Image (cartoon, rainbow, N blue to C red; front, top):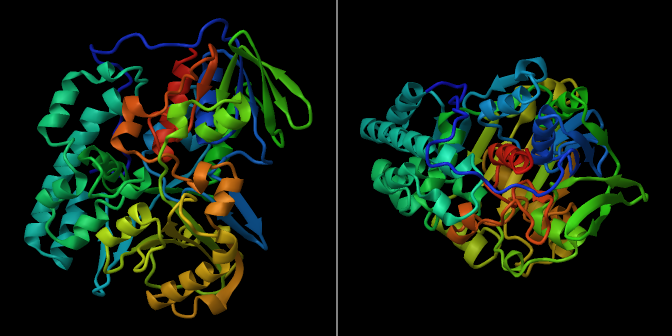
Length: 507
């Protein structure tokens, strides 16, 4: 498999039908929120000749893909894993630009280094031959054969899902009745993920490293449908990349290209009210009282928050949404380097099924944690002062539906995280800290994420595809949602697609 991702055809199959669109004029568009989805939508709208104004409450673009600068360190505050670079290229192409002129993407190798409780490690590679050799070396030849079969399976999933189920506006469940639906059923796409993975991979170590991505969807591998293995394809087969300058270089580049092509971007412009008349949004009003009239309004804030705080009403179905687990992140500037660490490091505990049971069913903190340690300065030393190093540590936690008082728990859990990572291969970590920032579900909620859940509403069966909140706002003729709370869902690739789907509702 190539490290460049799989080129996607832009043509729709014969089963495609005309999608629903906003009603009335569409010349003047206001986009609220310069997250990746808002930027993706703005680029496509500008490329189609619309007059676009983008209003962002922060001083920089990015939304959840934020930036923290402190004492010479530059930290990404949101996603750290970048996959499917062809989707970024697609966004730039919409205004006649190309990624390489705006952004330097470096392949990450290995994609991940997985550490297990028995002391073994497994480097994850996108190249299937290289990965087969690694699995054969660490686990055995028969497991390597199973891995090759698993790659064939997830590659078929991607092929059958992308155009018909992900990169497509879906208005009703009947839109899914395509030849690819039958193919997905035939290969077992609607069986449970964990048993399906176990058909190919017999060792718990490979099973974990190729199913943990279900966490992004807010469901356990035991409960998730096998179709979510497509995330493993995007993540562990198509390749992982890192932008020079950090993940925040991506929204900066998209914003710069949008501005070049006529998008008016207003930073430090928090929208607090939407003016409406006769079922149409007519203007966005900012905290400072500025009024931005519009023919169409695109909303990039978290969907339930946008309904409640901007549109003034929340549909019953949105009120009933179930949310993904949250996370505590610890951003650290450090004087210490760990030679055994790769760019992305996944540390698995003994427990696996128990982790998801605690996070989702019991809504309690992990008693035997599995967690992620990313070292951005591993591939871009400029993100830290000379001779220093930066770390992004993520521990999944329950969201704010849990009975956890983070005002009380924050300091205690921060200390527990440090004890855990020191015991798992990072000795002396706490004493080397020069700069740190802790983010809990409480802070995620303050940043505009419902239930303090940065992974948005969970991808349960009835919150996926045609059952996920639509990107057309019911009751409004000209309001479109974009971002992880609407179709197709969570993750950098999905929100980039979401921006395209929002634009298609308009153009």
